[in-house]
Length: 454
Figure 1: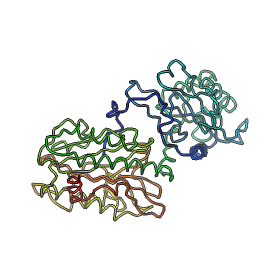
Figure 2: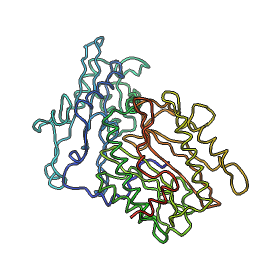
Figure 3: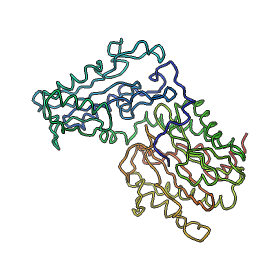
Figure 4: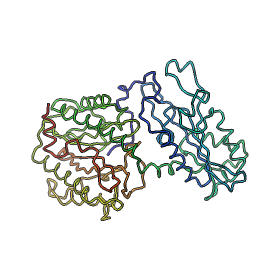
């Protein structure tokens, strides 16, 4: 459970002179091409334009590609655009499937500082990018203008039929649409349709290559969590622990944290999105550590709760075991194609949220004798992929190829006691769950043993 991605510990990821393109483990060009074809099939004779992410504002902020753009291209440089044209035999001028990657004009002077880039004139650029046609960015308005001029239905705001699809929150997309409307004399109120939702439908089920990258992100994140367990002790700051984890992630080949690490001790263990990490841990505290890393754009997501002095008190162990019990109850109840995740109502018997919540609410009490359900404040889990909170329509029915978290928690401010246990699971082809964090301690006894290990 955490806020959307933040640039945390960016100073540890200073940009090098090597272009980011060469630092990622990519899938084959055929995989990205197949995704573009699958998106085209959802356009129903329309066309789609997507833009890459802009350069970061500060030089110590590492570049991260737009997630949908990367999913469709594997391209990791700024300033690019992708145009996909679905076939439409009934168009005034029949259209065949086509795909274009538009690259910005190179700045040779700047490249002396940032490293060499590619443009449409670079040798073997189509083979390198894996996109059928590569052109200069200056050609994008003309290509789009020609397509729409040949079929004005693409900008008529009809509820059905061929249309222009783009990213509504993208400044580049808005500028391109405005320029296109002006050059074609189209009504200024004409809008494009949202392509982001279409790509989200494709991203929800992961292919084997994506699952392999998510496994590598989880393995590296486990190394960071184990480093945390060895380093935690009284009078150490939360930030120092976050730093040790970050170092372990980079040593294991990760690109960056998946999100701002949450390292909350004592009262901070009860704050769900705590990320200040400024407190000095005290003897008798519990520590909630929600922290993981990204490998080649794919995010891991793990939370563990540990006793700062290496030994849970009786009360801490009681709450820990209740949370772990609810975690296991959700696993035991799972049925592929039927079970749902992130059901905030917690009334549907097929919802894993319902199962986990009912376990917590019927096991253990607060100090004043009330059920513990009141101390669980968030959903049971979410999808994981290129984003640590990958897109989905919730409550989501869990099917083979989906990757999601199970993360029940109990947060009792009056006891300065928070416990969250989060693992990431893949729904296998056989419908069974695969725990990507299986190598990491789960039980209270395993956690204590890991903290004593040398």
